[in-house]
Length: 137
Image (cartoon, rainbow, N blue to C red; front, side, top):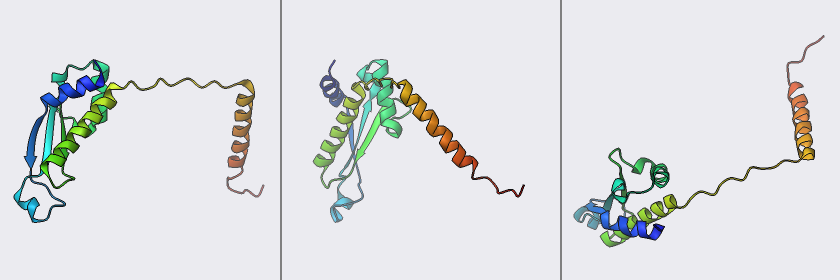
């Protein structure tokens, strides 16, 4: 299943609710619920366990104990712009979770590099050792 397929499936499962918003909009903000809050039940997506754990980690505090991701968008003055923003952010979150992190290649250190590193540590140690209290022996 490709990331785009997962995102498309997720968008069909999203529940939207509009709430009162603070911020730009003047008096219109007080009259119209322009902010959007979207909820997605992650268990309904049936993601593989590694993807689920990455998604849970990426979502952070947006991931609830019930297994939902809750995003709130209130940056714009209209419901449509806020809805698009929330859906876009959810899509990016899902795509990031679907991408496997690159495996870290173990660094290889040759003998000369190792000797230089140890010499540097010895020099630094003597500098730090000389910083003690001065004794009049």
